[in-house]
Image (cartoon, rainbow, N blue to C red; front, side):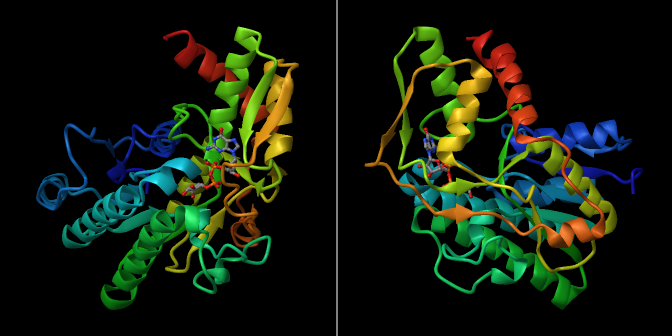
Length: 311
Ligand code: GFB
């Protein structure tokens, strides 16, 4: 496996960056990457030409238009259309150029809003979606189905994994687009630096979320590339969740902020809980290594060195 050429689409993002680092550290030498200016993945012709020319043997689809609850809610057209284009181009070109194995990454938001918790893979398409991110979820569900269709119709080894909420080095700290963990890390750090008496948290603070460090996700992707060959989707998570209030309190402790937390309930909570069942991947022999506290400490160090120090 390690001698095969592997194209990681989206290597400048949180997930793709971690996947490339993990593959390098684990002996993969032929890693192909392209920046957005080198290859626009929403354009079918250049993507097809790239695959024909480079002939990667393996592909990881880590390229996507992503964002937190606000961006998803405000820009459903971009989340639906860009993601459909990117994944359709990559998956179709992978098929046409004879790629041996492709890993498509979805998201825990593909599951119904009121799915049983922890959410088993079998919950897919059993109920209505959470409206704040249904455009993104529908695009991801289409990607899963396309991989399964290539498997059943043409016998291709195109697999799909569903990660839970991710965070880590290389995350997006732009408050309009980011997910909750990098958003609160930044808000709490800036409140501490400015000596502000309070930090505003969106929503009620009661929704529960599961957070997986992106290094664990990258290790899981490599594990699945090397050992999982089924078209059935598989969850990647840590099996534990916290409330948004608990997350904010932990961030305050790590960052050393002593002010108050206040809750802006005019902002949406989104889905009440989103904890993945990780029985399937655990039974195959994979488990995460990074605890939430350790992961946040690492991410905070990265933020100080790479965002604060360079601003
Ligand atoms: O991470 P997040 O933006 O998205 O928000 P989802 C999680 C929870 O944190 C929500 C609350 O209840 C937010 O209201 N929250 C509190 C905040 N303060 C903040 C803040 O300052 N910024 C943000 N962003 N949230 C995403 C989906 O859903 O999950 C994506 O939108 C994707 O499509 C991702 O699937 C994994 O967890 O609700």
